[in-house]
Length: 265
Image (cartoon, rainbow, N blue to C red; front, side):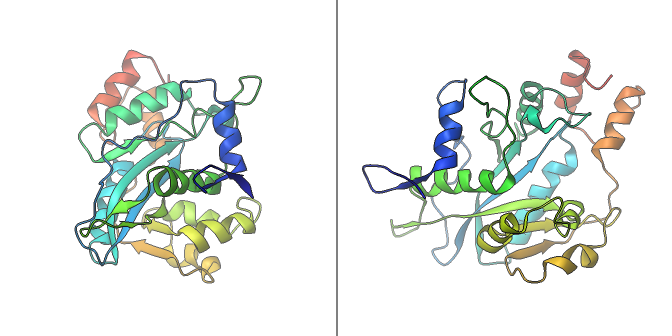
């Protein structure tokens, strides 16, 4: 259960706690590129959310949104919002640069796109000011609450409002890990894939999509986005940066930022 506001909206406890623990300025969900109204009343408003370290963000991350938006055109969805949600520094991955750098790189990468960068997950702290890890399911609940409760949903052509469907955007390589109970709790998957759903972009060079989907057959909110062959990986990009090689899979502004701040040396 959560706390009930004066207007009757129930706010999940984990969201209340997370916002109260922030040491940063008051939080507001970025909505500058969020479509306020759908064009087809028969469509379901769709919000794509990509979670990850984005250390650094690559061209492939941006292409995943583009491919998913094209795919959505042939479904019952209409994309109204696309978000990147970088993890906090509590993730403690060896290759993770500080969150403030990753947030800036993400912002530079999406300048000329319809993608927004949400700092909420990256800026979660405990009472001692230390970064805390936020589960993916909690991130999706955060977007659901902000868009459908705080924002009131998405307007239809007749002036009424519809609840937006918040969906996780991942690559098939991440989907492959979902069959491992040591990585993903079943209770979390039941909400992620049972309540919200996932757009899974094929990664032909890394993952067999059928093998990835095998353990997830009990969930029906999975949509597979066909992708062309690619071998882009953050590990490969970081190696190229350390070796001073040309990097073609990063947005130009991101490369300039990395060089300026001596990241990944």
